[in-house]
Image (cartoon, rainbow, N blue to C red; front, side, top):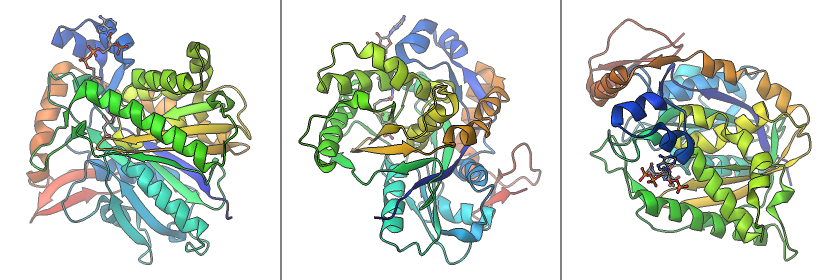
Length: 394
Ligand code: HMG
């Protein structure tokens, strides 16, 4: 079978964030509830000039910095916060990045699982030989929004992770065994007429954990194992991170399936490195799992060359998958060189008042007349002109 996996990655987050201590103070909630109860410290806030397209394009530009765009034969954007009911985010990205015409371009949706749906399709495309030597670009991009003042509010966030997938996986070679678990549930959804999500919070936690058990068991069967497998064989366990405490709950549940009565120890070495970035940006929906993977590669100080990592993707509604990868030699140095920590440090902290103003502006941004001045980031959403979205590019 053709080897396939992640050759390069790129990350984009908005240039602004809200410190969760400011949100706690404004909402009259003890800050410990956000810091310790949920594990979140900062939350990315997208300005009206940033949308799923601009975040996706910025992440993709980073992932493609050493690649000729003409090598891309498949471009999929996984998102649950698209900008149009018909035209995919991937087409806007094609235009902004100059991807070739002979490239299959589309968008996938299944809540936070939508990006992994794209990854699985790209892997099948490569392994089947349909790629004919070309590479796939899968971009996970989202802006997570819950009603102001709701329990979901501290678990918002925004950002994108772009993955270049190919038969030369110089970051992670992904294994062919995939355990799937899907069910029709109403844990989290967003009706067409709403900008923010509706969630049955506590129920969503149990749906996530049940899906983890189902996907993990299915993966064990898929990977041929009647032999007992223990998840502490993974050097790192990377989970979908709606908020960091959820990854902790997931790890407790996973280790419990394996009969481990003291998961705190393995949590420290298997999971915590993957939460360093997520605790600074919040939920990125489709991109959360892959930001956590980037966090492991950038911040885990142990040499991981040749190590196996476990990955768990969950999308409400629901679909979940458990799969694995082997870290390629030199992958950690490549991801460290992206200086993602510096990118996070360079963001501007906004006040609670600016946060509320920004979200109010974003409500109307999809119909606002285009302004001609481009500001800030290399790709900017300028507004709408004759019902067409207008973007500035570098
Ligand atoms: P809540 O009702 O505000 O919080 O909602 P809580 O009362 O459950 O407290 C949360 C934790 O803080 C608890 O810890 C409390 O004990 C602790 P736990 O018992 O769970 O370990 N706590 C404190 N700790 C220290 N000091 C204090 C204090 N007070 C309380 N003073 C909830 C929490 C997560 C439900 C809410 O934020 C929410 O609805 N978030 C959105 C839904 C979500 O993220 N669900 C996750 C699973 S579904 C999923 O991952 C899919 C998703 O990403 C969407 C997609 O697929 O597209 C969401």
